[in-house]
Length: 69
Image (cartoon, rainbow, N blue to C red):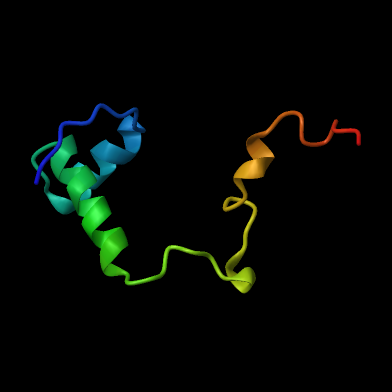
């Protein structure tokens, strides 16, 4: 099943993937990325020992340090 989706994506990364893997377009780059991610077979949940600062989306909250309670 296919579904048309509009996404914002880093064009530099897309162009690098297209060049590196000889892909036709951005659609193929996104499909390759999704298939590769899913083929890794992980549960999708990060283990405690796999944590890094790039995994913590709460750092994007500008108010997280200013909370009082």
